Image 1 (cartoon, protein in one colour):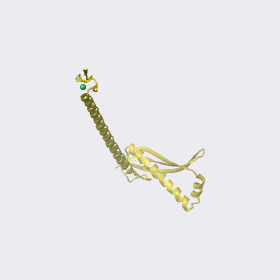
Image 2: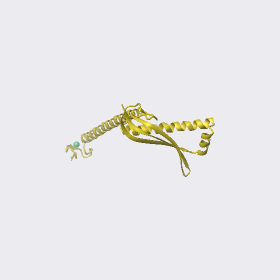
Image 3: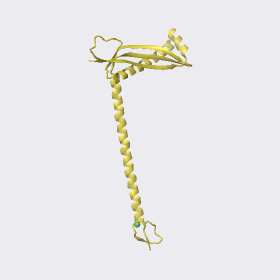
Image 4: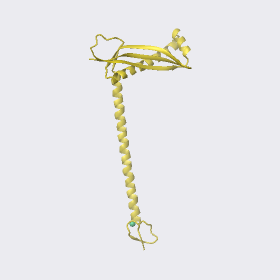
Length: 174
Ligand SMILES: [Zn+2]
């Protein structure tokens, strides 16, 4: 007679070793292990998703707070400024592939061309002002006063860029 290598039970010479009871037990343990691992993985995935959701809602909150920052070109003598936090600047640029056409369009506004340029400038302005608000937000300001916008062109080799720089003073207004 042979013995099961695990439980030591007497088994026939030609029977499976370990015995079928031990094999079944081993398989069950293995499956339980897999189920445990799977539920752990699911829990981790859920936590990750919750974290992502929390993060994106925080990002949206932050974005809303940045958007709410007041921006004015005025020196705002009528505003009750309680704190001046310094000058902030932000820029936005876009590459101009057909620079000459745009400059010609700017000087001789043909309907289509100039409106395309205006559209691009509006986008740049929006981006630069949002950047300015972002910098002010980092300084814990709630307004940016005396905002100035400069537009310039930069050419580096074959690449021409239209660049818009916004600057202003980050302040706290009551
Ligand atoms: Zn056994």
